[in-house]
Amino acid sequence: MKTEKFIRFLFLLMSAVLLWQYPLYAADNLLEKGIEEYKAENYEEAIDILLAVRYEQPASSIAAFYLGLTYKQMREYKLAERNLR
Image (cartoon, rainbow, N blue to C red; front, side, top):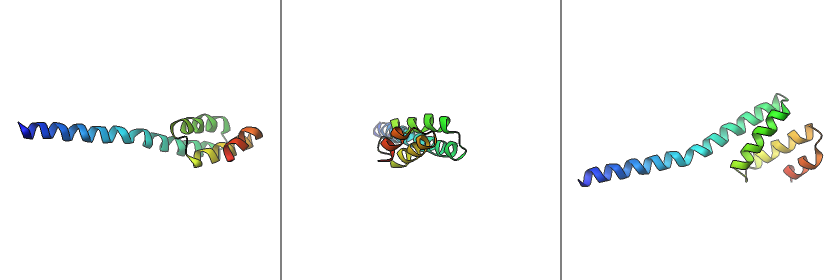
């Protein structure tokens, strides 16, 4: 009985850890995709993706940097400055 409860607890704990890490992994993949779109000069797509990354990870300086560079390329200088500060 105790072993069964322990196994259930362990399973729930591992599930929680895996589910907690998934959004971080997804945001990292989105960041990579946003950078790829920027480098391919697909600026509108890059902005959509990088804004999603900033929503998921507001403290991401890399996402802010590339978002600022993308806005600069689109001549949206005020938005670029806001993200590059």
